[in-house]
Length: 355
Image (tube, rainbow, N blue to C red):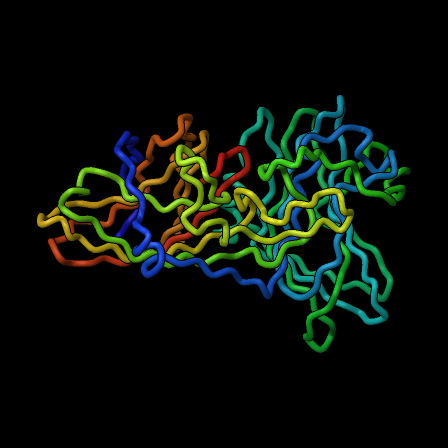
């Protein structure tokens, strides 16, 4: 039976990738495009010019039904700011907003949001329910953020009318220094746009949850190597870049209503929950012990898994691309036998794609 490893060892192994036939017939990705992702990561570093005091919000989008909020920024202002999600009911009906699986970040020194993911996946924080009257405003996740701290929110959200039907709401991600100026936000902050596909994003996406089905095996010539499925980045023509096993089809498609960010694919799929369903078959000709390892082919990564409701994080990041961290023990598998495991993960902030 698969289990979280007893010790998170590092490995430096030769990486092998699924063949074209395996990619076509044995690995797949499905995205829940019927649910939304409210995503706010651009501008990533925020200054006084980006705050409500200066008439700006980080992101404003109208969403409907079920989805997820994901925000991530760094306070580069010289003092403490207030961060919050402002909600507005644009309809003539009373609506109810339910927040669950809440995880928040306030950390210095460019630390990732891995512990917010822990709280999200383990439902460590109590759900919050808010009722909004027609055309009413309210806020949630209001927090004081010291200077030079990363801050953000991960949360599931459900928006319905009193009859339980999907309803619409407008979310604003904003911050301010002076509370008397908190209502000044009428325009989007200037996004940091280079045109690069890896630019931080913002806007609303079609889907926040992906299911990866991986039916993999290893042959006798592969038994001391690591078979790799990568995701989170468009495939490139540069063969030195391992790209994405799904040719970018796993990337959530985003729209920035301000019109500043034109690129649609959410590079890295930061903020997206990944449900990995792995069936592994030992075809090496030998009985052996097999492990699930994680890494990035781009650089730094904070690997974690949630397996059978247990969250596992080694407490350290991988500093170097392609160094592998052991995460799940699949156990001893006889030749010709298979083992199946279902676990959850995500690419955290301050990590590098492809994962």
